Structures are given as structure tokens and as C-alpha cells.
Length: 544
Image 1: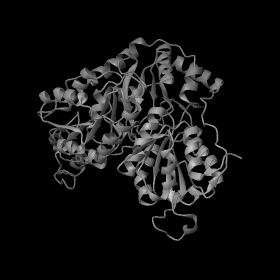
Image 2 (image 1 turned 180 degrees about the horizontal axis):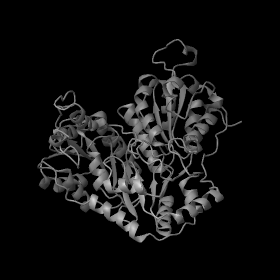
Image 3 (image 1 turned 60 degrees about the vertical axis):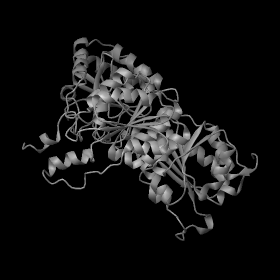
Image 4 (image 1 turned 90 degrees about the vertical axis):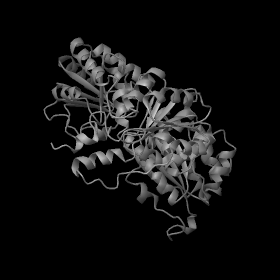
């Protein structure tokens, strides 16, 4: 038996043993005992303004560390608010552990104040959902939640904590740290892959997923060079391959380069490494062509042949696969042509309407940021400029939701800046996107996270307006926005805030934001005509 302490103290002790250094929360009376235990812990507690923001911060932190992000929320409304971040973790395959307070055990089942059925609420999103009624089981349950979050295809786990259970005594031992080894690939399967790759004239590797680290990204580059293959990155996984490298072919996401789509149609071996190649990268499941031979390498056996038929399925984590393959090849002309196609597609300047253009913003960021700059964003058409024109160089520099969740960029930027305080962290957010979680500026100020937020204001929900113009021309409804002065709002929170109306104003404003010893918001007022890099609102209205 271990040392007698409360369930809450045992929980925090278990988190420490799992290597947790930071948790995110919105406080609630249902887990006061945990808050008290955290006060005496070396674990940093970051207090958010809304549970959805807290959960997104924890999810973003997990993207950067590879370890489960941890978030604490209260029962009922708190848990419901946090579900937005749980959904991001599920869709993005990110390890996350959500701890949610629950009503006292004697009150369960009576629709008590803020009572919620956690398995019913989270069962379709989380890999593991449980409610701990016995404090002696709590350390083991926490350890299992970490294992569930990390294993196979990573994702969220939810642990409900009845408030009276947390103050009961617990003598159970603390479990050991959970680590999931990279494992080994099936040698015979990898040899088959090497043979198939050697015979292919136009192979194309698409990488994605979440079980990567800096070492496996380095191995990927070495593999691409030795095997003579081009590499494309899945939707919002662009940090997995250096965009300036001669083997980079571009990203497979929204606004796909037509030349890259042609390559995907014409490849004689499509290699999906780590990625599920879901709806966005597959262009609504139009790719790959049924005749295209597909090799799929994924850490979760349940994902193999689930969506795309394969000629070879290999159950392996990218690191294990890349350590095993001995593929060699030379396709210099083919690889170089795809890289040159990418360079032309991402060339700047890119003419768009307006006095302040996102083309100029992206060009300025290319000039004034380094390879370690972290870029975050939420959802919206503004993000297509990032995908197309920002050149990611290093692992750990892109934090974005493959789930397409609005409001993600600011919470993610806060988590990134706290994890890497010496780096520049730039958050892109649309005017609608920012207002989903803009109150987390208060969190940034309180936590000392000096992020730079670029609020792209076109006065509308741009993505929805784009679809509206295409499918219901001349019938705009419910997509316009009346916005505040975002710079003044930022200053009210204690941030640096400036409005930027022209290209000429952006670079000096960005430098002032970078020098500010506090979070900074640049209110970028852009022309609504510039709806995407590829078209304008007026062109959308033209008859086909």
C-alpha cells in the first residue's frame, strides 16, 4: 500500500509521475480538492476564460510535446463547453486527457445540479470515458487514460471525478509513466514495399497524422533522398517536411495545386505514411483513383483499408517504418519537376484586391521570421494563404486543427508560447474565428504569453459566404459581421493593439508587435473581394 492521501492528491501525484508540467483549466466547485492539490504541485496551472479555450490549449500543447495535454473543467456546462476541444483531439488524432468534475456519488442518477452522463456525452468522441467512484482506483485509471490517449491512433480520454470521491483517502500506489514504444515493422511487408517502390516510375508519398517527432521527420527526409521520392504533406501537417527541400511537392489540402492533383492522379504508387487521408486531403474522397496502387502505413490497424483499398497495408508507426525500409532510387527529373511546380504555386507576390493584401502579409512574414517561428490558425478562408504561401521549415512550427474548428488559433498560440517562450508565435484568425475565443487574450496576459495575433477582418464569415455565393447566388444571408475595433479591444485587455489598413503599414506594425513585451493584436482590414488566393467574390457570382 502507498502513502495515505486524498484522491485529489493521488491524482496530482499521478500526473507528476506521467511527466505533466502544465495543465489548463477553468475552475469549478466540483473539483476544488484538485485545485487545492495543484497549489502544492510543481505543475503549472493555466487559467483560461472558457472551457473550450482551455481544452484547445491542452490539445495544442499535446501537438507540440507528443504527450497527452491535460485539461480540468467542471461538470455539466463546463464539460459541454470543453467538448469543442475534445472533438479537435479526436479528429486530429491528438492525445488529450480531460478531467471533469461530477456531482457527489449519492446524488448520481437524480438529475442533480449540473449532472451529466459522461459516457453518453463523450462516447462518440473519446477513446475512453469513465467515472471513478472509488479513490483507490483513481491512480490506475489515470494511468490507463494516458495509455488510451497515446496508443494506436492517439485521441482524447475523459475521466469524470465525483467531488466527494476526491476528498476520500487513497492509499493506492502511483503507476509508472506510460510510454508507447515505436515498435517494429513487419520486415517482410517492408521488403515488399521496397520492391514495389523500386519498380515505380512516378511514386508519391503523402505524410500526415500525429505520431511524429523531430527525429522521425529527419528520418523522413533521409528516406526521401535515398529512395528518390517526392513528399507531399497532408492537410495542416505541413511541418512534417521542409518546404525548401528539393523533394517537397506541396500540401494536399484545401485549394490543392492543380499540378499536384495531376500527379496524384497519375502516380503509379501512392504511399500514405501516418495519414488517414481523410475527406479534406482526398478531395472529398475523389482521390486516389480506384486504379491507383496504394500502400498505407499507419499506427492503428483499424485504420488500414478502412477508407482506401490498398495493395499493401503495414501496421507501423512512421519512425518504425522509416527505420526499417531500405528503399533506394533515382528519379531526379520527376522529383525536381514536382518541387518546381510547388515553388511556382507558392510564389509571391500574388495579386489580390485591396489596399492591404494577405499576399503582402505572407511575403513580409517570409522575410522577417525564421524557421523556428510557430504559426497557428483556426478555420476560415484566410488560412488558405498560410497553406499556400508560408514555407514551413521545421517540425513543431505548425499548430492547426485538421478538424476545421473555428477559434482554435489563439488558444493554440498561447499554449505554443508557454511551451516555447523564446520563439516567435504568430496566430492567424479571421474576424469570425477570433470572436469564438478572443476572450483568451486575458489568459495570454495573465500567463505572460506574448503571442502576435493577426486578425484578418473582412466583415463576414468568409468561408460560408463563399459557399453561399456559389450555391445561392444573390441571396446573401446571415454571413455578414459587425465587428469591434479589435486593436482597441486588445488594448483593453492589456495587450499591444494596432489597426493596419495598407500594405505599407504592415511591416513596421509587425515589428512593433514583436518588440512589445506583452501579447499583441494587429487588426488587419482586408477587402472582402479577396475571398481566396484563387478567386474573388465578384468572380464567384459570374455565371458558369
